[in-house]
Amino acid sequence: MSQTDSLQRFLFDEAPVRGALVSLEDTWRHVLSRHTYPAPVRQLLGEMMAAAALLGANLKFDGTLVLQMHGTGVLRLAVVEYTHERTLRATAKWDGAVPQNAPLPALLGSGGRFVLTLEPKVDKSQTWQGIVALEGDTVGAMLENYMLRSEQLDTRLILAADESRAGGLLLQRLPDGHGDPDGWPRARSLADTLKAEELLTLAPLDILHRLYHEETVRVFDEEHLAFACTCSRERVADMLKMVGALEAASILQEQGSVEIGCDFCNQRYVFDEDEVDEIFQMHVLDAAREARH
Image 1: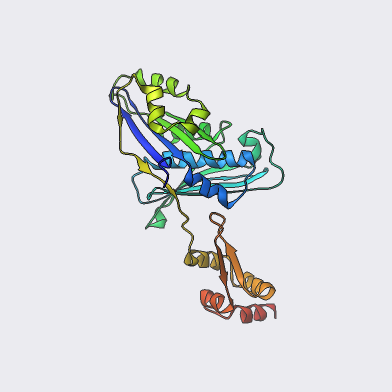
Image 2: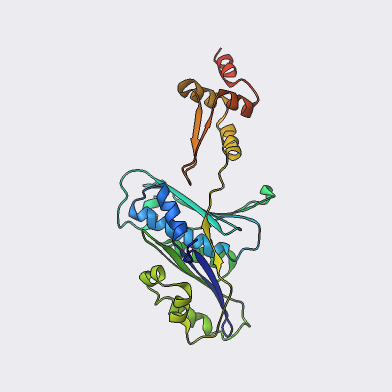
């Protein structure tokens, strides 16, 4: 895997600041190879991927962090999943022509929603969701407001994405008592000088040196990230159960089999009549005929 697919965490020794930098290249290209996205959707999805990696790096649990936007405008769906195994996947759906310069709230429409979900690997009953208010014109601004209101945590999140790379910088203020209180506004002001081009072309350690060479910064071991899809035939079969036996029977009658594709990786799963019967533990075509009479 390319060394650019990495997450670099760091801590200021003499200021109440912790942070992380993420750079995604191969992982991002895997996502882009599955679908051709309009430029605004591509940028949004790349920024969401970088944000998910940065936020997920601070979580100490086995499971999945999901960032998901639902829209009533031209953007219908944008979703990114990050796992504790440092893997990511993402996809998006839209309807019609996507305006090139429209702000994110306009893409989502008046009924847009932004949801953050934490799903444990084992006990799904402990799944937790938070609603991210659509305050601000960017993913970073919305998540900064969310972290401040829900976690009382001052956060600076700078994100960027283009056709070849996605990247991001996360800064968070630590509680009082950790170093010079003036260190937080100083670190934030320096972060605001970072240009998108630098975020997408420089290595994380080079960015750290460029911004904070006058600070004492402790750098932790680099963590590597990769694209991976969690779809499987078993999980798709569970999805088919939710569709229902009658709908499955209708598809069988029309097409002779049921085919379901994964939006994340484009893997196709085909179920013949016997396999559908096994999933529902009944002869679905016979059940559908009886339901009509």
